[in-house]
Image (cartoon, rainbow, N blue to C red):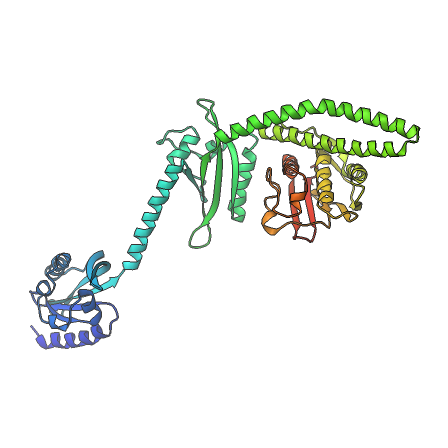
Length: 486
């Protein structure tokens, strides 16, 4: 046995160990005497250099060190590298016990003669990582409890294979048992027919462009025929390489609220329908009276009746809006497509709007001619709504500009005003049902927040798009586009 070689190796190791920032110690002999321990390891042990030369189990007899003693002897006797992951070590910091976690390695040191003359131990402090994982697990558990308490369902769609991973609550929404699998195609087929293409479009858009969606739709259980409404909110998440990983979110049962809305809409529809008949009669009497007043040269009476007639027109439009709203909510609104020239329709609607909104200057800048196949009355309703809003929220005697531009695949119609504009935070919400922007001017203008919602729904039913570009107090330009016939 060549001890001079051992001594040389020990001196070399001493220099390396002392300069090593990681906690490191060297043990020798059958009793595993502490030959060397750098300051970092002494700090872990909470000992000083007086332990040098002592057997490890004598120097550190604490309970949490006994496992280390056993592993240390195992590495020495069996000539095997041993690793311990996330080993808990109790240390006293500021007179208080605190848990630390280390990854330990025990490496047998073998000389050229095959003799195990020592064991080299290193320690890596992983306390922060372990505690972060514990905190994450605790947060996830709290989130799970909160989700369960709120009756929320969770779901995730894998970006690579479109496999759905639903929670038990989500499966319940789709009429499945906890042990049943939910396929993506099956989930889509159970969504209401009217909302189904919108949901598919939102999911595809999320995977292609990122972001998420916030939607409400009904789900029908094919076994029982029971329908329940859910509010679903999802977002696209990415992996470490920046590639789409999964589209995940939550959903909650809103059936009770939806049923209440349906009852309310049915009531509104009934009242609105009952109001249509007397309004039609009143409008007829007013128009007859206007004609007679003009023949008698009663200019004041004719003018007053004309103003009353305009109010009847506005009230009729409001009632039509409530009827359309109730149809939309119940899924009963339908289109009656016909072939017509969009430029003719724009000219007609603008002419009528000039009469009703005579205190504004409504001009057509561009009016491209193209034949489309759409519901003429409903497209007229959309344009009329945009013109009415432009007049409503613009100073008197200001300009409103209408443009219709035809491209290869679509026609885009815009209405630009010089009014109060729209705040940035309101741009994405203007087309929501009953939404009214938070603006001092808005508080003085009558409205229910359904006109733009109905306009957007009509455009979407035509597979078109609707949007707004604006800055507060700098006017607004509303656009909607319709696909051309193919």
